[in-house]
Image 1 (tube, helix red, strand yellow):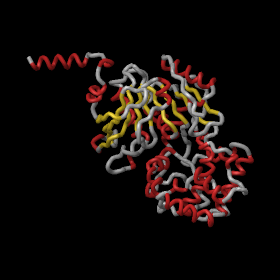
Image 2: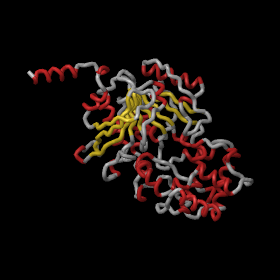
Image 3: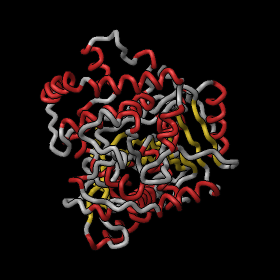
Image 4: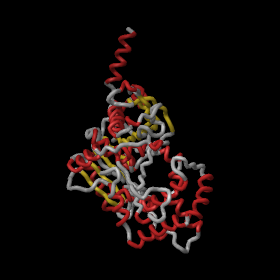
Length: 434
């Protein structure tokens, strides 16, 4: 009698409409998922931090596993679901604007080999976009058991590029993708970035940037002691690079960061500014500690991916040949500072495949870029395709090219596109941050 009663309960549970079930019960039923409740994001019913078991090698699960950190914010079983494809680590849960706009559930996925989502031993042979996309696919398949509505993938910067690569490997996992400021390079050292830096803005502004960089190098005997004291105060150490190399890297990085961050040309120091004013500006735009041991180690997995299959950028030295003392003039110094200086052989097979696929694919993409952003030079180029939409936002950079900051015409266009592609009505109005 007792067995029959338990069997009846099981049958009833299986056929109970999912919207009337308890989310924690449903999470408990998912294999490979450990969860704990955390502070709930505003406007959501529940928020959880999840640990999801992932194979180190999806083609050979017996080779071991790790746990990937994921944040789940639950809005409702009948709502759309947005999966956030991070490119780096994720320290806490917050809601992205696409999730707000669509009033959607959100699944926020830390990238493999970053933050807490690491195996005990980092075998970089398994840090590639095929494996990272398989992580996302596994999560997608798990949570489609709970969320059966429309699915959207999105990410920002390297996370936006991850969105593109994920869709390349698993085109049917989601209904549409929204990559923000996402670089898809076409070479290890993508020279489109050099073209952007040499042509964007006015001649006067570009000349002022070069003049300022040269002043920094010309006065290294004054700046380096101050930067050394600053670095000690910041707890920064330099053994991967010497402080002289780090200084020159930071000077060369200045033009890239200037446009990426949307700095005003009027803010570039000139001959009337004091030494301290020149230094404060330099630290604010291109902080030397970005090239310290701790930061290079933090982004080691990113640099490995860039050097191995994603491509990256280098630094032109033509304007500084007479002033560089620590870095080589040729080949151009690379921005991909691989872990422990390991020698990585670049393989462009994936980039060739993805760039070819992007020219002809019929999947639904909404690309959002800042026209003033350095990374817009390596954005997916627009093509005549009714199944994709491009936005290059005038005057916007890497950190403010967002839907909430669009003009009315573009804002209405993106809302209408989302409504048509997802067959839903959008009532939420995003507030601009500017």
